[in-house]
Amino acid sequence: MSEAGRIGVWIVGARGSVALCTLAGAAALRAGLIEPTGMVSELEAFRPLRLADPGRFVFGGHEIRPGDLVTAAARFHRRTGVLHPDILRRVRAALRRADARIRPGFTLDRAAGAPKVAAGVHVGRGVSPRALVDRVRRDLRAFQGAERLERVIVVHLATTEGVASERVSRLDWRGFERRLAGRTAAGFTASLLYGWAALSERMPFINFTPSPGAEHPALAELAAAQGVPVAGNDGKTGETLVKTVLAPMFLCRNLKLRTWFGYNLLGNDDGAALADPRRCASKLKTKDAALTRMVQDPELRSKVTIDFAPSLDDWKTAWDFIHFEGFLGTRMSLQFCWQASDSALAAPLVLDLVRFTERSARLGESGPLTHLGSFFKAPLGVSEPDFHRQFARLLAYAGAGGA
Ligand SMILES: NC(=O)c1ccc[n+]([C@@H]2O[C@H](COP(=O)([O-])OP(=O)(O)OC[C@H]3O[C@@H](n4cnc5c(N)ncnc54)[C@H](O)[C@@H]3O)[C@@H](O)[C@H]2O)c1
Image (tube, rainbow, N blue to C red; front, side, top):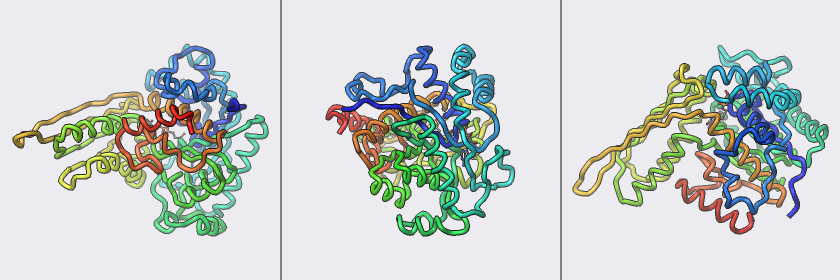
């Protein structure tokens, strides 16, 4: 099997918290400043796959907010305590290089009170979606050419969006193409257009967010036709990870789950975005689906709530209350409280996903990468919700030589 050549990673949402930790983390790994703790792809089982070295990834991306990565990283440390200044000092040059490759993106979101955008960012729907897609495609091609990259992987890490319109959600490939030629991007979401642009350039697309991105039927058709891998949706980093580990335990012991309420407090920009009910609907859908798919019991009462608590910043806190029934109708409960730096958990998984996806692309695998199901809350093409079974699928993939 050939070695990976020069690999580009194009991040949509390149100055966000997860992106920042991903970029700084990759540079810190390269400089030998940190261990790859939290990176699944570094487990012994995956060594035979000879995955690309994340320290050698070349980063670029689209962003809509003004600012620069170095300032954002220093601010992130002041707010959260994550990203020690010693590390920051040593990765500053790498962040500056990545910053120089970030291009203004576009946003279809003109909500009142939406944050300020950088110069050159297109805002609003009153333009042909084709023009937006073409602009993204030009940026992707320019990145690949200028950096002499063998392959570019596009990762969607932008702010959670609301859902696409009913009409756009149902379009097939041809319908999507026709609608792109329209005069307005109304009904589309930005993630759909970024994803379409990436796949049109035959670049693998990873959707780490709950936004519509990779799950749209037209994008799935396009990925298959182009022979390009896709992966998504919504990284499984915290509360849902614990849920998909714990729920099978109750099921294996034939204990009856009666109530499962999860209360999430988020204080970062993602939390601020999710305070908007339209965006929150996307997130709640992926978070609750994992449990209801596992426990197919109409009597189970389950609910996920997300509230914005700015003082917590990136230190996401989730409290889950589980009420269950055992022998003799005895009712018992379990509660857990998860407190973690959301971005420090997500960043190594982003690097993992790029490494696995890059290898798939190199081997000519296409369509949804179902062996990556354990990374996502709502994995594409995977109906198995149990974390351990999803992970066993990844181990089996590696054991079979990754084919
Ligand atoms: N942190 C986690 O553990 C985790 C887990 C699963 C999913 N996610 C998802 O990952 C995404 C990023 O999370 P974050 O904490 O980094 O959020 P963030 O708000 O810090 O970063 C998002 C970035 O995207 C940019 N952006 C918004 N719209 C854009 C557009 N149209 N084009 C280009 N850039 C755009 C924003 O300006 C911002 O810099 C969110 O959707 C979140 O739900 C995060």
